[in-house]
Length: 237
Image (cartoon, rainbow, N blue to C red; front, side, top):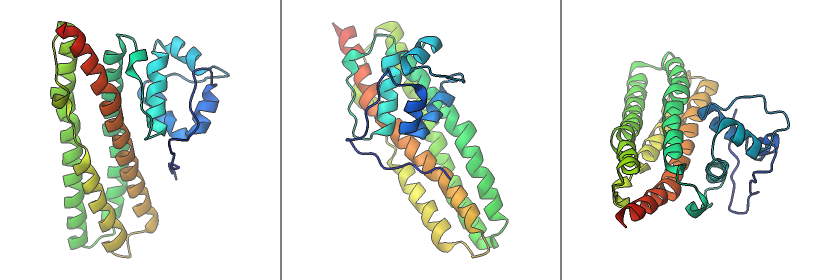
């Protein structure tokens, strides 16, 4: 089972000269970024910079995303990013949404259905209601970003407009609360007939989504918002 090790602000810093194998050894959860960006394997002894050049992706942006992903204390400097970083970042965030909807959630759904087959009607109905509420909030959050936030930023880039940072406020705390509710239900209250292995698999995917959404929020607050502020300031001159 995949477990993310806690990483503090003293963690190993990544560099563009690192071999990709070395990068993954720092935190193998970074493999999901390659998946989202549709970056091709094999790597051989290719460095991070060589891979970014091959894929036509900004090395600086890629390194910034990876550093945020492995270190919650990391504070990026947007001043080093080029003008095309914003649309590329939006592309990454959209890819993350597809990753959640097409990869993580279907796996969670599969394990939920397996667990429900062991539950009595009351337990099954309760678990289904909690999980459906969770799914609705996750999907609404992603849809709001897709339909309202990202298009406005893209218009800002195209039409030299101005967008206030307050308009980018995208809270994730409610999803965290719902994750806690499901966790308590699955661990504490489901009948003994529901196998531990299935419970752990379901919780693994839910925690995996929670942790990734937290990093998603950090990328938005520490990278997307400052980039939008910088572009808005430039457009207002």
